[in-house]
Image 1: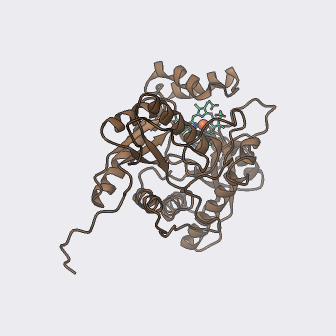
Image 2 (image 1 turned 90 degrees about the vertical axis):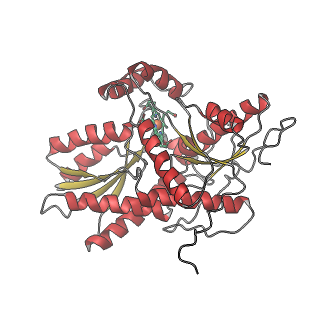
Image 3 (image 1 turned 30 degrees about the horizontal axis):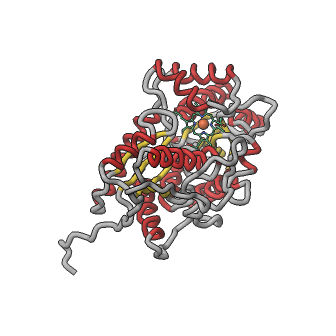
Length: 384
Ligand SMILES: CC1=C(CCC(=O)O)c2cc3nc(cc4[nH]c(cc5[nH]c(cc1n2)c(C)c5CCC(=O)O)c(CCC(=O)O)c4C)C(CCC(=O)O)=C3C
Ligand SMILES: [Fe+2]
């Protein structure tokens, strides 16, 4: 083989554009309340909770870190795509703030895109992290169809257990252990994710309970790999942050702060905290972990090292591009390898009917699922 030959470009057919789909966040103090109203519309979040969360944002200048983190991820994905010879456009749209998904897809359509492949900034099955994004896609596709614009959107499978996500988290947790002061290498490993109502947990995935089960699956993989690198068993727990419903409604527990107190009472002197439920250091990480949980640890005299989120770690970015390539092969009817670490195995590429059910408005259309019907548009064909 000619060593100077350019490798053939990664095959993304039949897609003609790639989409990063995320949550969105305020860019300044005036955006905070309108953003929070977008997030919580029709969701029964108490007013006091909204005011408290507005304070979290204002504490950081009214600007969420999430948008800049998405810009950084877009740049990293672009570089990896370029390195693999992929010249498709890569665009960015959000659920709750500019750039809104519908505007992004309209612009992509007008630039020639008809069949788009999406990756969302959530690695797990749940209504908030999966179906709600699929509903956003459906609403945008339907709105554009009504304007005479035909676009079809698919998404990649859940990536909590893909090798790149597991490797990036393993590296981050190992670094956190190595950053602890001498004599603390027995630190307990505390994984943290976003709490959700018990009812949302019970409805997550095709058979229920997928949200916490997928977390436990990747936590076990990461803790096992870190243990091998450190040469000893690492004891770990999965706990929760950012509970927001009324106190009468059960949400996943324990809360990270209560858990740190319990560990301290049990004699722990140090913890490594890994926000495994989040892909970047957005507001939940900055406030609920770096501010609140850190204060709790300080009060207790507990040494706490926080592991990085995957962010733009090269292993993670390569893993996402591998998934885009894999999903394109699935769309072409091929049978690609679908690597996964741990017993859960690779998730579905197309969500089964009823997966991550919407408990409030169950009939809302959701794209990227077996029961989704692409709207017809006169004179245009999506995915042609
Ligand atoms: C599972 C999950 C993820 C992870 C998956 C994913 O990434 O999608 C996530 C991400 C995020 N959540 C975020 C922000 C908020 N989430 C809220 C409210 C809620 N989240 C929920 C769940 C989740 N949320 C739930 C069940 C609610 C209750 C209301 C409802 O049933 O929908 C509220 C309202 C106020 C409050 O109650 O906290 C805010 C402001 C931001 C942006 C952060 C930034 O700006 O940096 C991000 C990435
Ligand atoms: Fe949230």
